Structures are given as C-alpha cells and as structure tokens.
Image 1 (tube, rainbow, N blue to C red):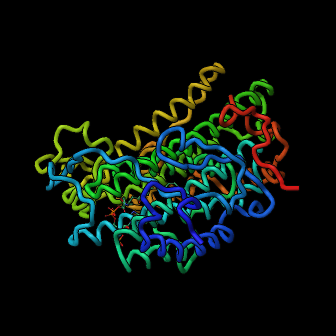
Image 2: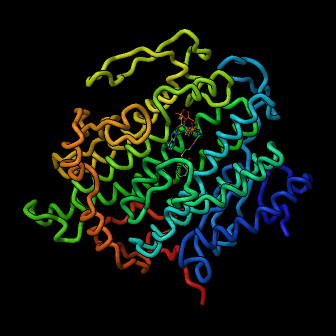
Image 3: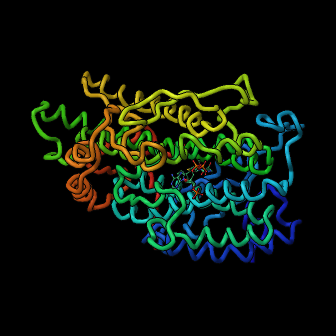
Amino acid sequence: MISAEKIPNNVGLSSNKRLQRALEHWQPQYIQWWKDMGPQGFQDYHQVYVRTAVSVDPSGWAHFEYVKLPEYRWGIFLADPVHDRRIGFGDFFGQPVWQEVPGEFRNQLRRLIVTQGDTEPASVEQQRWLGQRCPSMYDLRNLFQVNVEEGRHLWAMVYLLHSYFGRDGRDEAEELLARQSGNRDKPRILDAFNEPIENWLDFFMFTMFTDRDGKSQLLSLSESSLDPLSRTTRFMLTEEAHHMFVGETGIARIVERSCQLLEQSSFSEDIRKLGGIDIPTIQKFINLWFSLSLDLHGNEISTNAASYFANGLKGRAQEEKWDDHLVTEKHYELDVAAAGRLERKAIPMRTAMNEVLRDWYVGDCEAGVQRWNKIFERHGMSDRLRLPDRKFNRGIGMFSSLHFDPQGVWLSDEQWEQRKHDWLPAPADREYLLSIMATPVYEPGKFANYIAPPIRGINRMPINFEYVRTEA
Ligand code: BYC
C-alpha cells in the first residue's frame, strides 16, 4: 500500500486519490523491474549509503542514510513554481505557461516525455552488472546512487504521464518497464541506451558524456511552456550534476593513475604491463561515448525540432540568455555532404534547433576534457585528450551513412574498415579492461590498481568509510 510518506513528494499525492491509485498500480511493477533489471547481486543483503530526495530545498534533498536498494524511497518532486511564469520562446512567446496539456500538442508532448522517460530505466539496465567489477566501495556506492536517481527520474516522467495523459499515459508508463536495453525485439528508443556498459571505463564515459546529454536535454525541457514538465526537469537537473561528477572525476582518477604508472616506469613501458589503462585506450572510449551521445540530439535538420520550438514545448538551454526568442528570420550555417564533398549551407534556424543544442553540448564537453588535460600538465606531460570531430562515427543524422576520422577527414568505406579500431575500442581493448576488472574491490579504502582514490569521500565521510555494508 502506497502512502504519501512512502513516496516522498511535494505534489500533494495524499489528496489526489486518482493519481495515488494509478501509482499504486504501477509501483509493484516498478519494484519487480528494479529487482530483475537493476543492480545484480545487491538487492537482498546489502545496505547502501545513499542520498534520498525528501524535499526540494537543499537540506531535504541531501538526506543521507543506509538503504536496502529495493527499499529506496523513490519520490516525486517538482521545483517550486515561478510566479507569473511566461512562455519564453516560440510562437506563443509572452503568454502565460500552461498548467494542463493543450489538446493540439498532446502527442508531441507525450512523445518528448516518453523518449526522456525511456532513457532512465535504460541506463539502470545497461549498468546492472557493474557492481560485480567495481574498483572500490566508494565507486560502488556512487554507481548505486546514480542508479536509484535514474529510477527516480523515471518516476518523475511516469508522474507526468499518469497525471496529464490519461489512459494513454498509463499505457506508456507500462511500456517504459516493458522495453529493455539491447533487447532485439523491444529495444530502448534511443540508440546509445542499447549499447552495453560492461566495464567501468564505459560507465565513467557514459556518466560524463551521456548524462551530459541528459543535462542538455533537461535544460531544454525545463524551458517548456508545460509548467509541470519544466518544474519536474528543473529538479532532475540538480541530481544530474552528481552523475556528471561521478563520470568526470572517475576518468580524472584513471588519468591520474595512468600518469603515475607512466612515471613509475620512467615512460619506457606499456602501462598495461603494470595493470593500468593506457592513454590511447582512454581516447578510444572518449571517441565512442562522445559520438554516441552526439547522436542523442537527433538529426541536424529536423522539422520535429522546429515544431517543438515553435510550439514552445522544448527550448534552448538557458533561453533567457538569447536575444531573439522567436527565431523566425535567422539561419544556421552547417556543413552538408553533397557530391562527395562538404558544402556550407544556411538552413532556417528553427529546423536547426537540434544542432543549436548540440553546439551547447559540445562546448560543455570540451570544458570537461580541458579539465582532464590539466592533469597531464601537472605531471609535466605533453599527452592530451581531445574530442573527435562531430562527424566521426555518427549513427544518426546526415553523416551517419558516411565515414570520417576523428579529425573530420572524409574516408572511404575501406579506409574506415581498416582503421576504425585505431579510433574505437577493439575487442582486445575490451578483453583487457575486463581482465583488470575481473576481481571487484570491496574492502573499504582500497582501490583497484588502475584508478587513483578520490580527493574526498561522500557527504564529508572518509574515503575508507563503509559505503556499502553487508547485512549480518
Ligand atoms: N537514436 O527529427 P529527429 C538522458 C529518431 S539523455 C534512435 O531529429 P527528434 C539520460 C527519432 O526518434 C536525454 N533514433 O528527432 C542520460 C525520429 O524517429 P521517428 C534524453 C533516433 O525527435 C544518461 C527520427 O529519428 N532526452 O536524459 O527531433 C542516463 C527523426 O529524428 C535518435 C530526450 O530524449 C537516436 N539517437 O530528436 C539517463 C529529450 N535520434 O519517430 C538519462 C526528449 C533521433 O521519425 N527527446 N532518432 O521514427 C527529444 O528531444 C528528441 O526526441 C530527440 C530526437 C532530440 C532525442
């Protein structure tokens, strides 16, 4: 039986019997999904030191306690309403925002919410075996924190579907638990969420690059004219920040350790012989996850994106910083492949909205990569990591049928086949990573040889704190 206390919320759940009943119906299916598809091997006898959102103010949000994973209190939170909030872009600019879904935009909004919602359980499914290969108890706890919050993000989207989309919304909420990452017959909607995440380099790259796409898309949805969508996604963004922290610092700690191992070997040895992760391998995983995450912004030229913008459903990150909120006159210049070469073409800005968001995203990723490069500088090393060209390894959009190298040089199909494993993880790279991760590290304060400890623990706890404990 669901009670308002069992589901922390600020949406007045106890006074909305219809919604409460709908969620009561959905919750057991969710828990079953979590047990079947969530972290494997950590459901029954482990308690995890996690943060649970119990309200939207900073103190309520940072509530830490030991929790058995299936008993995590997945809550429903909307950021506080903004007084007299107005539509910030598109054809309805300046009008009051909507508290209900306008009939004419129902399908588009449902599609956006379902697509967003689908990514959340997908990521939990992708990561479900990682606990068996963790580099430390600190990292294990962070993995589970990310997982439970992705679960909460699913709750957030299911709340919107149940509250605003009636029968269709309830059906969609069930489908969100029926599709499965990587399943041939019922895959997740977006490609990156069907890719396996089998090792911790994948995981850290995913939380760095794919969660950053989450940030980018949530920033856009938080501009939405549908106020409940805006308020839900605004609160989700606060949690997303921790996920990117996990990814960025995870890679930073691997880079740090690789530098140390290189120094130890006086730069004369392949650090794989010392159990480390060599820099070319790190670069290959950047190339993979950055390109997969670029795809998540959709096609370069998209009438869907234009109509989302026109109708005020999905805006640009930090819309208030732009001068022109109508964008009816402007054009966007992009490279288009035509007759074997690239040509610069101007297209109406509204149809290039996916590309505008991608620009923001690339800038945000670039800043993160520069922070990693500071580690090499500190060690006095000339190595650098870099983002590949945006045409590299694309699966969506106009470059998806073509091949480019990481510098953006056009390649023939044969050249690509010959060289792709110079730039993307090869089976041997994956085998190597699995070999160094085969034995998980569960002893508090101990770290696998390929990763440096973090600078500090979680919630001011020491690094050797027992972040995950086994029940007696
Ligand atoms: N894979 O007009 P277009 C996150 C399809 S991540 C497969 O460009 P649109 C998170 C598209 O469905 C953030 N198919 O599409 C991170 C359409 O197909 P149909 C998730 C793709 O709709 C880590 C066709 O191509 N946020 O939060 O403008 C952990 C036409 O394309 C893909 C959202 O999803 C793809 N990558 O753009 C946990 C925000 N891309 O229907 C969570 C909401 C496109 O014609 N969604 N297609 O057969 C959106 O804003 C848009 O749906 C997209 C796609 C930007 C994703």
